[in-house]
Image 1 (tube, helix red, strand yellow):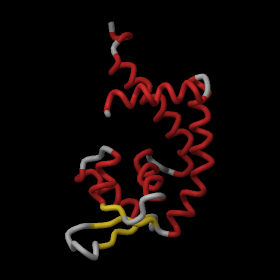
Image 2 (spheres, one colour):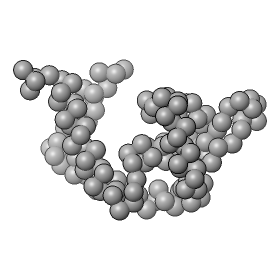
Image 3 (spheres, helix red, strand yellow):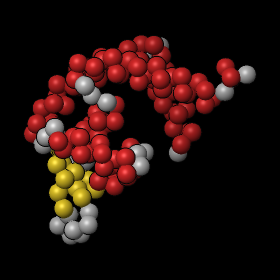
Image 4 (cartoon, one colour):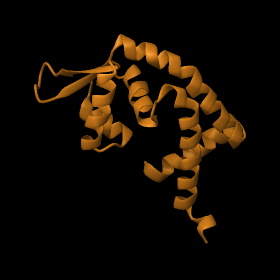
Length: 136
C-alpha cells in the first residue's frame, strides 16, 4: 500500500535527492537551504528577509538562524529598509557571489545526475509540472 502513496514516494525521492546534494557539497560544508538562499539572492538583491523565508517555505524563526550563519561567513548582509526600519533586507556580499560561483559547477553536476536518472530534460519538465500541481 505504501508503494502507491504519493507522500511516501515524494519523501523517498527527497531523501535521495538531498543525499546526493549533501555528498556533492560535503567538501564545502554547505546545506541545501544555505545554497537556496544564496541562489535566490542572486536575482533578488535587497529582498525583505521575510519574503525570502516565505519564498523558500521556511518559518521565519528558523530562517533567522540560517541568515545568521550566512552573515557570520560573510556571504550575506542584512540592511535596514530605508522606508521601514523594522524591515531587514538581504544582500549577497562579493564574498557570497564568489562562493556561489564556486558552487555552481557542483550544483550543475548534481542537477545533471538527477535529470539523467529521470530520463532527460523532458521527463524533468514533466515532473516539475506535476509537482507544481500539488502546491499551486
